[in-house]
Image 1: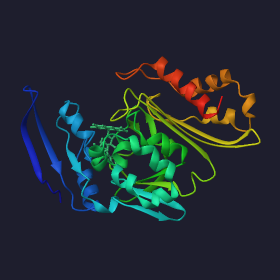
Image 2: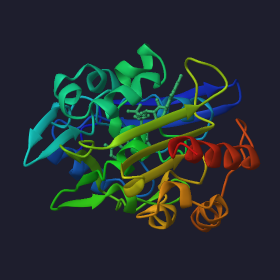
Image 3: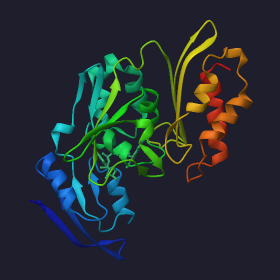
Image 4: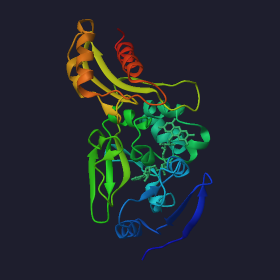
Amino acid sequence: MLDINCQYKSVEVSGKKEINMKFYKPKSLLELFETSEKIEGKKYFLAGGTDINVQIKNGMIKDEPIIFLNHLTELKNILQSDNHIIIGALTSFSEILESELLKNKLPFFQNSLKNFASPLIQTTATIGGNIANGSPTADIVPLLLILDAKLKLFSKSKLREVPISEFYLGYKKFILKRNEIIGAVLIPENAETGYETFYKKIGSRKALYIAKLAIAGLKKISNNKIEEIKLAVGSLNEYPRRLFKVEEYLKNKLVNEIDFADVEHFLQKEITPITDLRSDKEYRYRVCINLIRTFLNQ
Ligand SMILES: Cc1cc2nc3c(=O)[nH]c(=O)nc-3n(C[C@H](O)[C@H](O)[C@H](O)COP(=O)(O)OP(=O)(O)OC[C@H]3O[C@@H](n4cnc5c(N)ncnc54)[C@H](O)[C@@H]3O)c2cc1C
């Protein structure tokens, strides 16, 4: 049974357009999937609402149905199980920042998120929403990429796990099927252990800013040789991505043998820098190269 809790009609937006929106509040995960299956065409899920509400206000979402997720507490937790830290998709950024488990097991991940939005947004915005909104600027994604995180995707009859590096297909395009949601994020509990870590989020000011570029890195260097390296970028490409080709070039190189013309060659093979209202592609590309140099102490 569909549970239509509320239906807003004829709401004026900017004094011009009318919107006619339906909101659904399923009582359980099962009802969520049943509701979702019955809705034909495009629909949205509302977790924290910090992206969705802006899109409604801007008229980007007009009359597509919206299904509330935010009351489904089974998707709101941080646990340790089978050598992984499991973060439910509805966990808020405040809960991530306050978690003792993350402080002990994944302190680099936790600390890197301190510049996420503002305390007010942190209390509402969820990890699942940050990933599923599909913005190139999503802060959490470059971090999850270098930590080899997986996503647990839920549907009515199936549960599957996919590496986050395989989730995005293009700008706001994912492998999520029609009636599938992100249920949880899995991070190997030792993903940071033994690595030197690096995260830089570049913006126009020091607080409450969306990244012009974000880069995350892990490296293990022994006797001047790069034994292991993982790099990922946000806000540079149509979607955040791991720099596998650059990593492959750098792995097993002596640090003083790195040729940055080669680094640029491989970087260009895997990214297509974007220009938007925050910055242009030349700036983003140059800052990215400079930050890779900084990370490698070059
Ligand atoms: C003032 C302000 C500042 C911000 N600052 C930052 C910032 O510094 N860094 C940053 O990265 N972002 C920032 N954001 C963007 C936003 O807060 C984040 O992207 C946030 O994590 C979105 O989560 P949410 O729960 O609010 O998503 P919602 O708005 O509820 O949903 C976003 C999208 O994800 C889908 N969705 C949500 N949950 C799921 C799920 N479990 N499974 C499948 N689909 C789902 C929805 O259908 C929707 O399309 C900011 C936003 C505002 C308004």
